[in-house]
Image 1 (tube, rainbow over the protein chains, first blue to last red):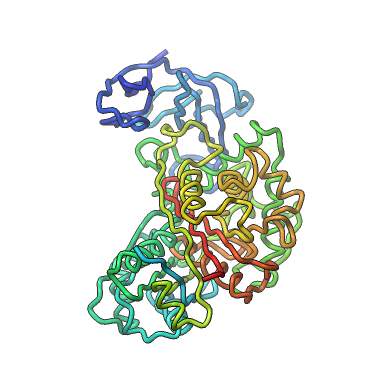
Image 2: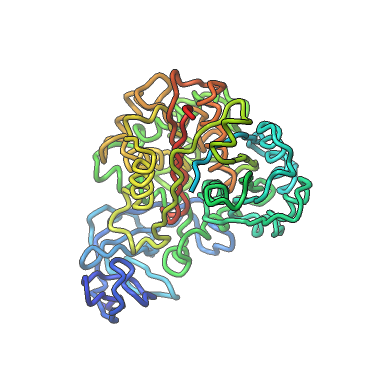
Length: 104
Length: 385
């Protein structure tokens, strides 16, 4: 399972997604790169039927938010064609593909 | 700092029109100036709220074009942008210009022209309010963001979309009387739930329509207003806050910190509590947004907003009438204009001239929210000057 790169605050230990040059929660200046497991629980999702301009993938498609380690929320695109497992609370693998987070 | 009052308001009808973006801004501004009773040459600063005019129409420099079109002299003119809160922010800038003594009279105007672009292009322009590197690149749209909010709300509070879509039914009931609204036909819950699935669980009618329109207000010091205005409205609080345009910064999708903080500050500044508010115009860009906003503003506890709509508490004649104008869902949401259209409605309410008049309306609250709760303004107005 690939890891997800994050930024951790040395002061409040809050996790955030990069880029972050200071802690986006408490404002502390000391932040370090870290890695968390690429696995999260589905927090919510939406099935989009009206896409933005230049969207060259199939419609409808699903975008989800996953709750990662320490409650970090992460937006990702769902890559499976079957919606059977798409239930809030279910666990999924998360990784980066073509510059965006995907989950399956 | 001096106290500030609104002495004039104006707005175009919202909907789908041929009129250009600058012409609409001038039209609403002219109305506001005429309504104020002052000569246009007295205006010393202009602030124009607009979100995606440049992307959708190719026209920039909207503030300068509007000022020149109004025949204003070489005064400072500024465009402000904060996604859907651009109009509310323009008002706050005008209020600040007067409060800090820079201008005796200032004009705030908001405008957007959206219907001449394709739905895909508008969807892209609106998605510009998301962090494109982390959220937008997954194909998330703005209705999609509120679809995420809605699905989580259903899960967390064990309610259903029929309860949330009741907001739309109430909105259309109010819009029936309001000639400024885009959508003025009654709908029932089944029609809302059977409309096209834009970003499930949100259906087309859970979303505010793509619209054109403009709205404006003239402000001056309370002292001047008392002398020259027939019906001045006092600004008890004018607050602006920010939150985050990035989902990974949020702890939950069920509350927007920018709203909570703006409301806290505004109630404190005005010396009132949510119980003192007689009428509200809040940012119902989607049915679920009204539910969440009504909780964040302190009118209902967390998770109680949907039930409150169902009970009729937010309808005309209810405990706290919300969006008597029809709100964004029925009036339409020409993005940059909305914050000032809310002010237009509340000024009418406090003057006693509203189409859906709330009885004994003395204190009113406007809430304008931008992006994923990234920008927010809360304005509290009073009839007593």
